[in-house]
Image (cartoon, rainbow, N blue to C red; front, side, top):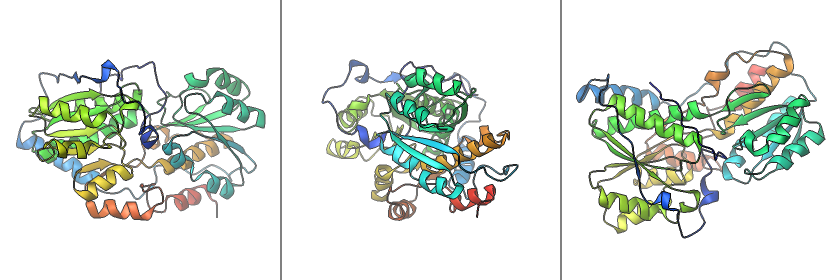
Length: 390
């Protein structure tokens, strides 16, 4: 059973902050120098050995299937209102580019007016104020928590403006139409990669997770992995190497190599998102550590996909960021019509799968300018059909 997600005071973005943080300082804080140990419960309801492997393999077999359907089925009660004003707050991170890439097409199809406002993810308040001054009916934003723009959020909600969020871990509240891929959804992604490691290792995975624990959703992912290993693999172990944003591509390779030298029993390394392993494979190869290690992760982009193609990583879960804009628009349509979003909780867990096939990884790299999986095939047309838009 899931344990309560740990509250962390600093909360600006989550999955997919990726390559924007690849540069940075050559130094790391003392907190990043040593792993934090996580002890598994002493007992487990799951059977040991072969039964644990069989149970995990059955789950993974389903997770390899690429979703083909969108996650909403209930159509709006009436024709989609036109003339709605939507502000998309586009942050500086590559993941925001993915989340927002379909907003122009959505607005054009629905006859809505779209205003794209560039913001900094840590300080989006001025952008929210610009949306308020413009007269937005709805504001769409990815990553930034309400705490980063509380004054403007209060002003917007007082004016009747509503928000659609993705990747920020906000809880449902008045004025918030969606909180897509929040803590619960990312916890679920952690369970997926954990089951993969159980199955792949024959229930003998000694796991190191590389994580940035300042982000609540990444802590939720960590808990999903830990809890799944504890419940479903009596012989598995789990440890966490906490790192900081500025460590990406700079200190992470050395920190991982040092950990593996000090803990030679480790045979799996999992990464909280796809930018974290930048440079790690080369460091492990140089240190003669690569052979016994299986590398996996959550939220692939081109980095993880390329490693799968090269055979240096084994598996990653997907995260269709472009799809999330359509789900946010769906919530706006329902709200504009006064319809209840009855499918919200299930829909906010985005379509997801585990990718461990090099040919498929290469196909995804070749199929998109952003080298990522955007969602179920034909998802845009399926949303438009559901909305009754030609």
